[in-house]
Image 1 (cartoon, rainbow, N blue to C red):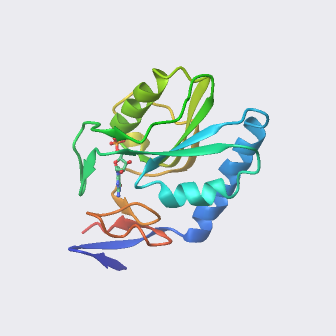
Image 2: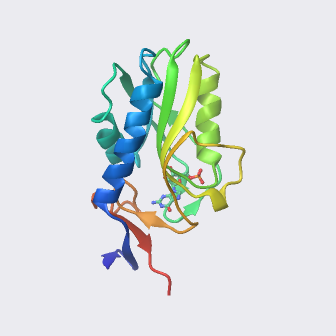
Image 3: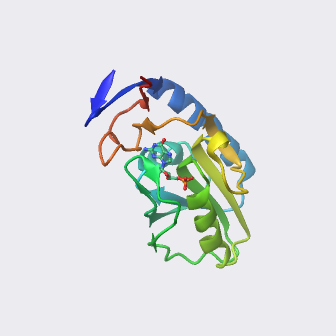
Length: 177
Ligand code: 5GP
């Protein structure tokens, strides 16, 4: 059990299980992007630990860029993608792999895809740590998924509850009463 602010969370996916799946996805990316010089676009803040762990398992030449989106506050999606900050790289003709911590409604990912596609990349795929398929409201289909999870609120391993909990090595889920 873990208390964060006013809520109780319980362990959901261990650091070891996270590492195992992330390694498997990295190996797949190493095979599928060999010779393609991909550019990874990591979505801050939530993806920073996922990105750091995944990238250290990538063995092919690649670049990494970070962008920031603000669309989620505390435990409720605001349903709107706000500013995309930091997208400075030239993406025309490049093979882009978006790295995102979690796809929930898909609203954020749809906004990011739209923002990237106008830059004429050669291809865009999505690698996500967590996918809440039941919550999906958009026609988004993540290409690489580490874990499909039920529609419950999770925290840890980069994901926060109201700013807290990002530093936890394991993933926790909000305790149901
Ligand atoms: P979407 O736009 O797909 O509804 O939400 C995507 C964003 O909402 C994620 O990047 C993440 O920041 C946040 N989010 C969605 N579900 C959760 C959750 O269960 N826990 C946390 N901490 N953030 C979430």
